[in-house]
Amino acid sequence: TPPHFHGQLLHVSAPAATSAASRALRLRPHQPLPQTSQRRECQHGNLVATITRDAKIVSCVSSNSAPGIVGIGPGKRDGDVSDGDCGLAGLGIPRPLPLLLYQENMRGVDLCDQLRECYQVGRPCKKWWRYFLWFYVNLCIVNAYVVLRESRGGSPPAGFNGKQFTQRHFRIRLAQQLIGDYQGARGMERAARKRHADSPLEYGHRLERMSERSRRCRNCTNKGLRHESVFGCKICNVHLCRGG
Image (cartoon, rainbow, N blue to C red):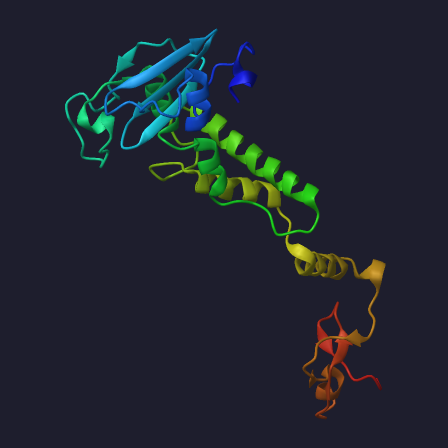
């Protein structure tokens, strides 16, 4: 809110509700809002409130710019409107500096929320505090991605063969690093079974259920008999009849 930013030594440039900006500018309800390319500004301390008309009425509150300074958005000075921008910047009409700073850094949306909405981590839950937990987890992932991207100047990290290292690639790498060599409950059971097979003296040979499907008994086969059994020795990996 404007009272919160005023005098708090915070540098902000953000859109505001038209009613809040109107109160800051002391506009009366019967006063018309400015037409295209017109603006109204008011400064109180380090806080500047601006109301202007783009494709619609735009209100902005800023503490990092001075009133009365206008400019044209970057990339629009030559009348390039190929990206579909039909607002003031696309028409080459000057705009207030607070709005230019906001568009330059935010591009019309909250970039943090935009990144956080993609590939979210979490699941539905009944405990309210878990939503806060997942929110901060997603926020930490976004911050880590932004720090990596800015620290490398846009160049992809080592070992990446693609052209552009996106947030999706970052999250996949992060998940792989967090998972490590974990194989799940079944994978751990197979690994433990393999360790048991490698040390028969410790665990010994014993008759136990091998599988649901019966196979021919090794002893009976050597004797020329045809008997099948679901039991056997896992260390020797052979099926045996329970009767011996």
